[in-house]
Image 1 (cartoon, chains in turn cyan, green):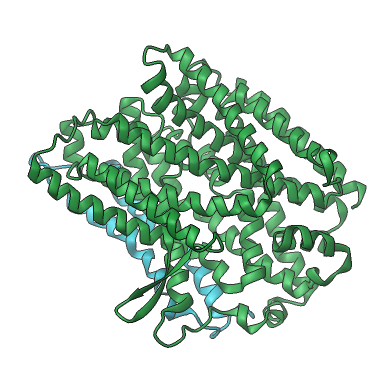
Image 2 (image 1 turned 45 degrees about the horizontal axis):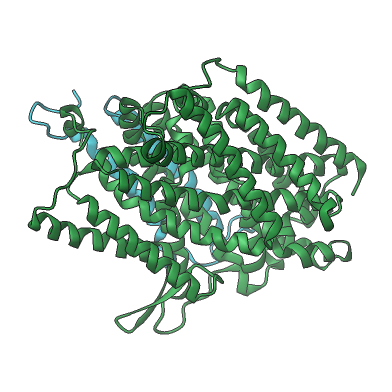
Length: 70
Length: 514
């Protein structure tokens, strides 16, 4: 099921694009600011902290969708 | 320092030492095989891999230096967050694939893979030497972390007496690594991570309550440190520095020998891939640890006379130890300091094993004793692991700590130069082996030269591009040069028909997967 006889990649491998989605966190100018603050924590800090579970979910989804191809 | 802190610290240190020796009997196998000593027989399941990689990636330097940077320089120190956020998905794309190939061909290191894939012992040697060079100062830095907590516990730090605690800690580490191989740090990592999580969770609840909440903490931080400085006209300023530090660090991560050692020890590539969804738990802890730097500012520990001497000696690296001593009762300080010290021992052990594996496979068996038996190979690795550790110890005892940090900076710039051969090699054989070697040379030379130009005072170079100043992490800049040289010369060498080596990993099934 992993590859077709011609050696072409299965469409499910497109899920792997999710792995580069967290590169969005490199767009520093967008979040380098103090507001809106969350329980006293400036935006810059809680925004990046919030990305941690998002990154984990990206890897998790790719794992579940392509498990048998790894 | 209270005696209770010392007692708790010594008890935990003793317990961990015991674990290190017991580890030789864990999942018992023939430790005279490099595969068993150096990779734990490639049998670690999901949980152990999680602890091992977590214990491996988050070093004492993380616990001490990241908050120290936030304490001293502010927001820029938080680049460690986007770094870990992008790193795990990238690792997902690379390491499970490497695991499969390494398992099939009994490769123990990244250099083994590159040697086989490009049919070039020389390219393997270059990668191995780069790995060993980059690892040595990294081990030395672990020692600096241990040194800071040992000093904070009240041991004398001057003269030869001052070196004794560190030497004892290291002899113990060297002994159980020699006996148990990778099993020792794998088992100790479980204890380490539990201690770290207990410390961090307690710290981020107790200290903000003592300081009157996060609002008060962030208000105490001077505006210049609270946010990245807005870039001046005609420059990308701290924004590009922040982003390239994160990206460059993430790209260097999966070629560090100790990371590969931890990853190749997993029992199968799915274990590794699954872990990329769970390792971010450590990233969350890292973010909280980074914020300890601001808590230290809010608590004003650097202005307290009882810590002034330490700050003079260790500068901002003393921020977190001082914060713990100021905020916690003695016994908990002992636990927290044990977490930091053991947190240094685990990666130091894995790094010395990784460097030993590199030496043994790419130098000893390749060039010195090609006819060596498996037992000779394992014996050589055990001995070299001792040499590497004592080299690092001499390094720390004879040179000032800032020197180790400088070399660590250079280490990051060096190790990333092996990334093209590794990452491209997993997906394509298009690149020419000599083009990759010359790309490596270009990156190494340029990186070292730029770092000397900055007098080791930083890792960010102000690149002038189309009338704009782009401050960029030197590792990333030189990586781009490295890839550029590799690309152009591949075209040239291919046009000239220069032999490109025989790929011993070439199999129909692997081509199908790529």
